[in-house]
Length: 446
Image (tube, rainbow, N blue to C red; front, side):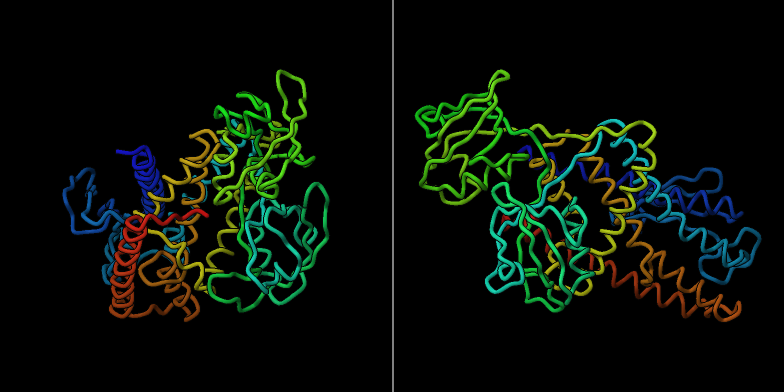
């Protein structure tokens, strides 16, 4: 089997830990509120097997999506001591929100660990292309431009850019781009109702981590060999443009297809000036192959002082959460982004592609994936949809607004049952779409 297949399997322990942490939150909160826990289940019934200990059934179930903690009184009818129905709205809300709270806490802990041990990896965002007549094209953006500032603030990620464009839909937004070493001020008006498959700006984004780019190997007789490139050279600049990452190297070579381009490399501590004749190539992905080199990236990390690790961890987690909420909001209003929805199969594909492409250390890559998925699980579970924790919280809120009068248990039960059936149906549809994507060889990543 290929390495990509095994890379995809990393998603299994990640999801298992996230689900376990989520359900532990419900379990512990139930105990704190004095509610009797009847079952702690991984997966969705029917039950495959289980065992009973200290009055709790611990079960493994057939449908490997999610998990649950079943407590006494979930049917809304039982009022025995230890039943959920005997507890106050605040205690029930605490129980329902505890799972998501644990996922947020896990994300924060992982973020703090990554920042404290490895530091912060910065990413640069480039224009991968523009649609004809789009706001990006009208603003004069070109393939290979680096987006460095949006609405007066430095840009740190493509998610931040998407979130900001949502806020500025229909309004002018200032954007500073870097082109061939020069900063260019531009103004763009993100569309409120963009055409399908174009987005608000009509731009393809290419995000990559800041990294030193080294020549790993040089093909004999190639353009790179003729230019004097050697394995171990670090690319300093191409066409007098500093190269803070692999994308900058690739885009500058791309601009000079069929022409000679000056470049500087660092070799044994000294800077060498070279000239490379860039041959023709089929696509930007093959430009390094056409030149005759294989490159490796050494990501650059910003060290964070010990006293700033905790606040920085909370800050980065908050930014990731707000970006995720903006993404969900965009998903609800932009059909173009529906293709980004993934089930467990799709998550495995995403994991495989991210692990294969990321220049970051493996543990950092997997931690970042876990952080994203944990926050995703927390936010999605709190959406006011039937069968989810947020849907049950909605009924608690309705009870409070009605002065303590609960919705009839039978009616609430029907709502959640229908919601569960629809949710399972949606997950199976997504699973088939994920399998079809794999079969066709389509990628999640640009």
